[in-house]
Length: 403
Ligand code: FES
Ligand SMILES: [Fe+2]
Image (cartoon, rainbow, N blue to C red; front, side):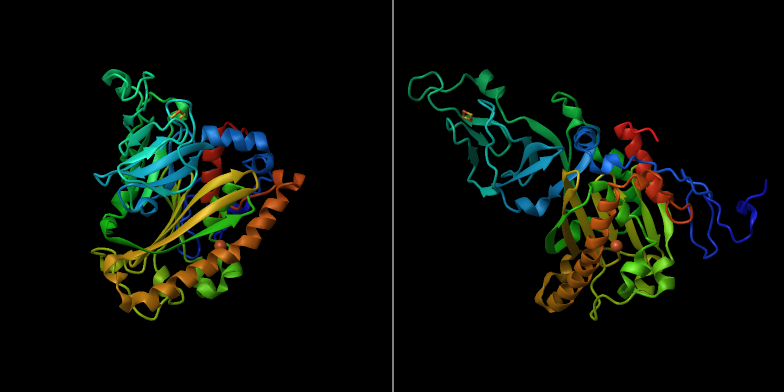
C-alpha cells in the first residue's frame, strides 16, 4: 500500500521540511496515531501528580530558583521542590547552599518566609541555631544546665541536612536523589555540558537581572512545557512577534535527551524588533549567531530562551495537577545595567510578558480539554511535534506511563 510518505512534498521524520527547516526523528510517524503518548489522567489526577513529584521532581537535577533570590550573605529563601520544603541560603563565603527545611531537633521548618539573618538562622522552638553553611552553632541548655552544649561529635552530626545543589546562569538546581539522603549526586555539568558547549560564546558570568515576574497558571506543568516547545502556534497566538514565515522558520533541536527545543536561525532578524535601542551582546557572539534564537527545555522545569543580547528563564514549580507557578526572569549583559538602557529593558520585558500572557487562556483550555476522553485520542503531528513527543516520551519513561 502506498502512503503519502512517498509524496515529494512530504517531510519525513528526521529530515528537512519543504521550508528548509530541520525536523528531528522521534516517536511520531507521518500517520496520525490517534493515541496520546501521555494519558489524559496524568494531567488531571492527584495520584499521578504526586507520583511525578517523586519520580521526576525528586529524582534528578531540577530547577529550584534563582541566585538573586539570596543576593547577599545571610539571605534565606524557603523553596518547595518535589513537594519537599527546602531552604536556600547564601553563606558569608558567597556560596549558595540548599538544605532540607527541617530543624534537626524536632523537625520544625526554620522559616516559611524569606528572611535575612546575621551569621546564623535560628529555630523558633528551642532556639537551636545554625551557621549559614548549615552546621549547628548553638543548642542552648543542651544538657539541662545553663551554658551547656552538645559534645563536638554530637554537634557535628546535627547540622542541617544538605541537598545537592549547583548554580549556573543565575539559576539554582537541586537534586533530591529520590529521597536518599546519603546518595551522592552526579555533577550538574553531566547534564548541562552539551548546552554549555552550544552556548560557549555566551558569558553567563555577565548576566544582569532586569525584571522577574511570577505567573500563576491554571494548568498542569506538562502543558506549560509542551506549550513552550510548540512553535506551530506562534503565528496564531502571537502574531505580533513577526511574519508568519518568520514564526515558522524554526529547526527542531535535540541538544541531549533531557535538553530539547528549537532554534530560529534567523529569528532575531525575522521577528519584530523588541527594542529600538540595541543592547550589548552577552559575550563574544560570532556574526553567524547574532540572529539566532534558542528555545530549550532543560528537563523538567527550566525553560530557556536565548538571543545574543538577552536571556529569559522560566522556572516553574508544580503546585497541583491543575496549577503551576512560573517564575520568569529576564537577563541582559551587565553593561546594559545602567540607566541609559532602562527604557529599552522596560520595553523588552513588556514584549516578553505580553507573549506569556497570551498563552494563559490557551493553557487554561488545554487543561480543560484533558478532562475529556478525547484527550486520550489526540494526534501529535510529525511535522511539528517531534520535540513535544520526545518530551512526553521522557515523562512516560520517568513516570512509568505506558501508552
Ligand atoms: S525543633 Fe528546632 S530547636 Fe527544637
Ligand atoms: Fe505561546
